[in-house]
Amino acid sequence: MCRKLAVLIPLLTVIIGLTAKLYSQSPGELKTKEENPVYFGVIPRDNPRITYEKYQPIIDYLSESTPYTFELDLRKTYLDTVAALGSGETDVAFLGPLTYLHAHADYGAVPILKSITKKGKPYYKSVVVTKESNPIKHLSELKGKSVAFSSLKSTSGNLIPRYVLANAGIHVKELRRHSQFDYQDSVVKWVLKGEYDAGTVRESVAEKYVPLGLKIISISDPIPTGPVVAGPKTSMKIIEVIRNTLLNMKNTAAGKEALKKVDVELRDGFIAARDSDYEHIRRMINAVPTGCGIGCHPKIKKL
Image (cartoon, rainbow, N blue to C red; front, side):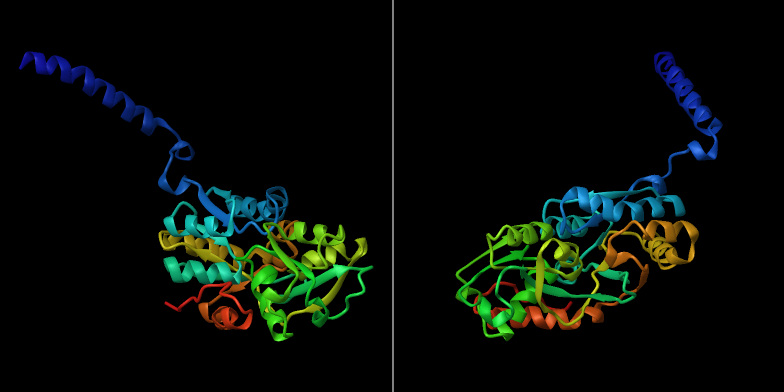
């Protein structure tokens, strides 16, 4: 018994000392679960440096305006971003319509907000571009030509353009050559170099390069802006904090300053989003395997 006490007394002394030290700390020094980083993902439409510049102001604003610390979580591919959201490695993410539908179907992820662009609209557009000096003026002229697409999981750079080309009577197999590039800026640069007759990107990317010799030959119908999506393992408390903070962002001085620095498709803040906002994109996904001549996108069933 004495030997047991001899062991326990020093141990109890250490525990009491640690407890006293913990409670002597100020509240700001206490590390709580809520202070663990909230990871915010972004689909890699742009290279990491550009992505950081476009989205970090949102992350900083959330960290400064909420009880949580937020960190930008950049993954290599669109599917990596979706998988991280589904596994809980990433808590929330900026997704495109197509990647949202995958995240919803595969993991039960839900949309909580969508952005308003600098044009004051909750939608953006997909465009087909060529070099200004290229004589091509219409989609019908692309048959037998080369086309640079964005990532297969890109709504504006792949899904919508394939659908538009199919409606113009051009199947992917009827192109002389086509490739897919991870970043939309890369698509434009290859077109400007003359390596491809045409490319497919979102309108805001194309507009940056028009002064450098890019020409837009086709503009799609409106596409709903990609949603802010919560993963299945993200707590409702965190979701509500993010929702309320971003909804109110353009009404605060700090929020207005942050919005001046972000991607043009986030420039006017956020509004609520619902799954039904993306229903027509879901229908397009299911139509493309027939319309483009090959099974280029899987069917996505609504949960």
